[in-house]
Image (cartoon, rainbow, N blue to C red):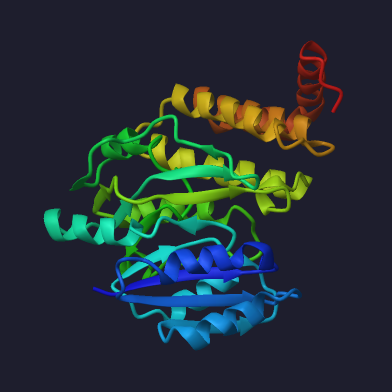
Length: 316
């Protein structure tokens, strides 16, 4: 079975060779490697051409800069593999990763989505292992309980760190013009998959670097991340249960602490407080309270936000 590996590339010449080496040297060789140069202005395209000459499995798409979503969508439109593996161009794989997943399929049967271990690695080489490793491989029928069980063992809302059956993306594309596009489409992915698995073999190395989208604290990016996360958790926890989920609120709290480590942009704190208040009220008392608080009483929301900022010593 062929695996299409999709890599969007934009100005990552310092990291690109390590990424590509980890893909072309996979111990599973039946690969279609689609590299999408998204208008890079550094030497990234030259590096891609160099690898293309050395490996006939490589296909290069060269397009004007349109963002990661457009780059991935272009690759999805031409891919021919039975399965799809997304890799970001500053990250890299253990060379046994794809074979581990395909061996799992041979042993237990195919699944629509199979995750595998990931670790965060800093530019200085420091590796931060997962706090919630999964110790046994499996393939199971998809249900919400199984998703929750493996939630902390894999990256919860990125498309990297797993291999999909290509049919999952038959009617799904990434939203262009948004960041955190992975999180945005996961409700559709979870609505599509019927079976889910996990392989303990191999590893995805997720690079933590200062120039990445994740670490750009603009208010626009901030809002898109919060909106995408709320959409994801609403689907994951509430589509079968309309009652307030403590898990959702707990995740939002920890997510805010996570964002604060990157620096919150001007206006971000008030936006977060309003966002969480809106979510909490929507789950407790429903849309009428939202209408009252946000349409009829904007001053009340501002007062609440100001008071919370004062209590927690936040000047933003």
